[in-house]
Image (tube, rainbow, N blue to C red):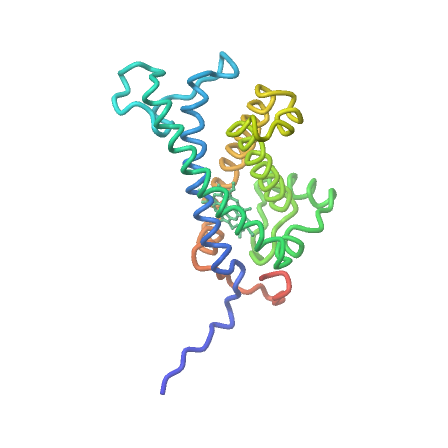
Length: 229
Ligand code: HEM
């Protein structure tokens, strides 16, 4: 009889629920940003900022036809509302697991300012330390916490824009409908900026990308199962 023993040189860092919700979240964010840009173009907040149609979702099938047509706008709105459910339901599972399993507490804390400045200095000198993929460095911890906060605030401000009458108190909190739009826009900008850095780092260290697919990484020499999942 043959038995398959687990490979002792590999440790699980991302359980299946984290991997599945992470990739669904990535898809949901692309849908939300792409359609959101098309909706924004209809009535821009800043006259100098308009998103190229090719980068938007739900826009006009024929790009030469009326730049800001109502067809493109209403299609984008449908995409945005459909994406909203995927983003919210999946995001709640992603967050609930991270909080209630204690994963965020173990992996994202503590954040020491001295470690943040040291990691930034190392990165600027192109000395990215990535020997031990079972732990996040201080900058990763900050970025992950920041993007989680931006996603929560994007959802809350989005809710107030979707149902401004029912969520009047939220609209008041954001200093009116235009204030809520501005907060929603700033959250989107923070998430988009995070994505540029996050995807670049994942491509620079492809082993991290693989770990988000298989869940496993090579065990560090001092096996810290506690720091991993
Ligand atoms: C679409 C392209 C994306 C790629 C290629 C990507 C890649 C990765 C990789 C490789 C990791 C593991 C890092 C490591 O173990 O060192 C990771 C973790 C993470 N990513 Fe992404 N990601 C993407 C999209 C997103 C988006 C859209 C968000 C949120 C807005 C996000 C939020 C996170 C968070 C919070 C973690 C930490 C998860 C945890 O440990 O619980 N990612 N990502």
